[in-house]
Amino acid sequence: MTEVETDLYSIKDKMYAAADCIIFGFDSGKLKLLVFKRRVEPLKGEWSLIGSFVRLEEDVAEAAKRVLKEITGLENVFMEQLKAYGRASRDPGYRCLSIAQYALIRISEYDEELVEKHGARWYDIGAVPDLVLDHNWMVQDALERLKQKARYQPIGFELLPEKFTIPQLQKLYEVIYQKELDSRNFRKKLLSLKVLIKLDEKDKANSRRGAFLYKFDYETYHKLEKSGYNFEIS
Amino acid sequence: MTEVETDLYSIKDKMYAAADCIIFGFDSGKLKLLVFKRRVEPLKGEWSLIGSFVRLEEDVAEAAKRVLKEITGLENVFMEQLKAYGRASRDPGYRCLSIAQYALIRISEYDEELVEKHGARWYDIGAVPDLVLDHNWMVQDALERLKQKARYQPIGFELLPEKFTIPQLQKLYEVIYQKELDSRNFRKKLLSLKVLIKLDEKDKANSRRGAFLYKFDYETYHKLEKSGYNFEIS
DNA sequence: GCAAAAGTGTTAGCCCTACACCCATGT
DNA sequence: ACATGGGTGTAGGGCTAACACTTTTGC
Image (tube, rainbow over all chains, first blue to last red; front, side, top):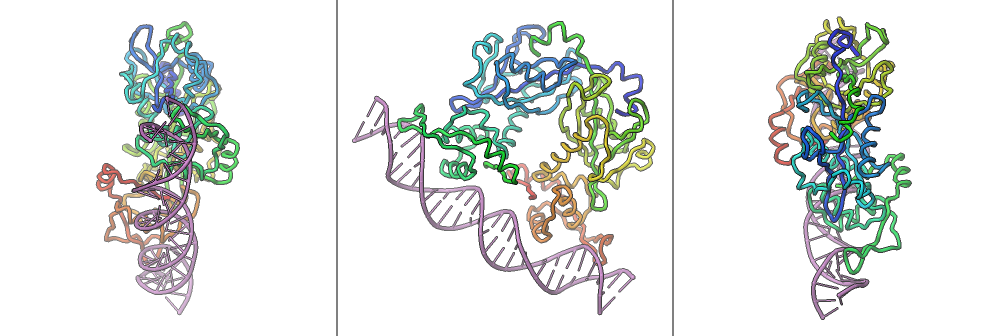
């Protein structure tokens, strides 16, 4: 883009680009991360995020979707770029920069067989093992982003089944924010946002009494969003 | 990072990485962007962000610092990665992904001569010309990030001289947020944060009466930050 | 003396927080 | 009948937002 591009150095300065995915799930009240045991050298047997080189003819975002589908069978899930990791020394072998993207998936929907076949495994977010290269940093950064973003945008719902209960939702926010929330205030706040649809069904999985199921009303949310409404859950 | 990396495709999949800088300044009550007229083909004569290929042996962040220094003479300024732009078709010539970083500089401090020598120019943020490739998107995204970030972190001060007046600071926030603020509330809020040091000097550039100069107290800010204080300017 | 920007207080309403008890139901 | 999680209301305090006039001084 500048004069520098045209000087003689540039011809040598091609490098690999990897798309690495931080895949979050939520299950049994825990936030989980999907990691992957490398089956090939170098670093065979080490835990790693799921990723791939970006091919010359594909978009970076496409590459991430490709590997996500390969490992989980899922398409059309929430995925957003976190940032690029570009330290020259980050990969000891060859120069490779990584564009990290995080995905939020409904843990009930992924293809278990496929995941196992690829040597992948869910880890509780509090017990993620050592990962190769700078992948643990990526996870940290992604968690931070999730924490920030969940506050102002309804992305938490991407981690829950389509039908969920308020206590489930509260638990999710508690693990994301790493703090306990008051159930009365939480419920009041959520319902005041007018974007939950109460169903006529109960989920009795967690109590004898059962809790009403709700759906997130994306349509209403998008309408409200356009008219300067702001979603916020503290 | 996955099996895909080891297949036969990967050997061909090297690409260029550019570091492009969105350089913001603030002057005469306006937010400005530093852009650059390309002197070389392709796209000679077009306006562009300032950037460079990332060299094999340098960090992406270093590359951005390098070009910033080349054009403005400045070092140690606020600079943060925005994100990577990785569409396969973004550069019509060769595959090149760009890691965009935005910088906030004190417009009084840059090296004018150097800037002119490189064919660079400040544009009012409301009147940025068409830029090459996806650079206008980068500017939009950077503005959005600036708006978000200025709210919760004292980065606005990076755009002001070390000594500034409250009305100057207010004007800055007004152009970033694109809305007018109430001067009584603004002053009250800022002073309540306890991170401005009032000086015994006045700046008479903008009024006969003159306005007191202040400095941002980074030391106190960092202390307060550690003890769970949060900066916020709405 | 006047123009032009700097500086100053108060009030009302809203939202967040804190807090404790009853309900429904399966065993 | 009891244990377990689901569901409900209120009051106080803090923060934000709205609002108008006086001060200073160079010309």
